Image (tube, rainbow, N blue to C red; front, side):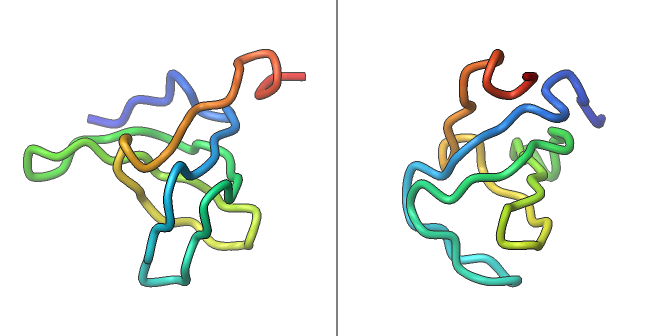
Length: 71
């Protein structure tokens, strides 16, 4: 099921994350598109400021304050 509750909210990585599209350094920022569950794992699809969209695990990101996400 796709959850768009936090769609548009800003987030940042809390650690180095290697993805198929490229590496995300700690503190890389992006915008949440949606959250989903796949094979029993929660995933967050994020459009990163580096220009690509890839999923990450919830423990790899920190959601920024809601007021910062929705100016």
